[in-house]
Image (cartoon, rainbow, N blue to C red):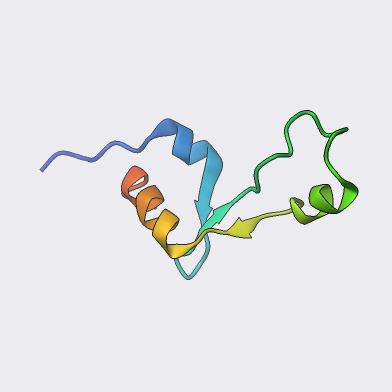
Length: 65
């Protein structure tokens, strides 16, 4: 059976924890930050663990993750 290809965009955006959960960066931190409240910008700092339903979709994009 041939190797499966990974989606290149998903490789750049998601990574996996040691236990197999999907790690992602929160949204709304790229531009127009002057409109966002300070608390919203603070909450979007660092990395988040993705929900199981969305993580299932990402796993199909990264078969060897």
